[in-house]
Length: 253
Image 1: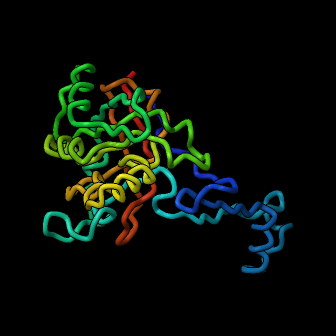
Image 2 (image 1 turned 45 degrees about the vertical axis):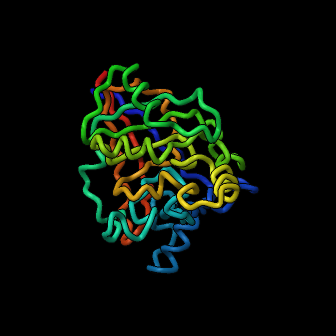
Image 3 (image 1 turned 90 degrees about the horizontal axis):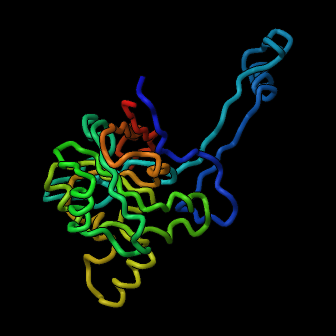
């Protein structure tokens, strides 16, 4: 039997102080409330229900990017390479299941984005030959900050150059265990304003490439460098820029 490693964060209500860009809210309705709803809707009293209980349900207030999720090209720009960017419901399912590799970038500082040379060096160290359809996961160790108010300020990020390098080798899905694929937003913003140039802020997102990112992964430390598969199917949100996903690694132990 294969072994499964959950790479998705648990969907839970975020604590006070977490910025809205990170937030989610789960509202629970218990079995007693369910019984009352059934009586109101159908006229069936609690004594006609097993244990006097009705259904338990939850309501979720959640942005498509506010938990472990897969980005669509539409998130990055309206046009990619001269054509309308694809939304999450338009992407091929084949992208979201395949062999995967972990690039260990845990030694890098916040904002010290992974370069193409560093990606190539790490692949050589692991002995993995990158192939079209591989899913590349960048391990930063920032999942330890998940759920904390400063979560989005951590992470090395990935350069546009490295993103192009991976794309040119047939990689269409790339993931990271940090808030975003690029360096932390505040660091990008500071550099963009200091240099007064376009193409600095959100450079890897807006690299003019039709690819998907998985963001807010967890548990990459539990994986070997390669020799496993990943399933990362996003929710089919019509016209969506992203879809929350249950991302799972599958190992043949």
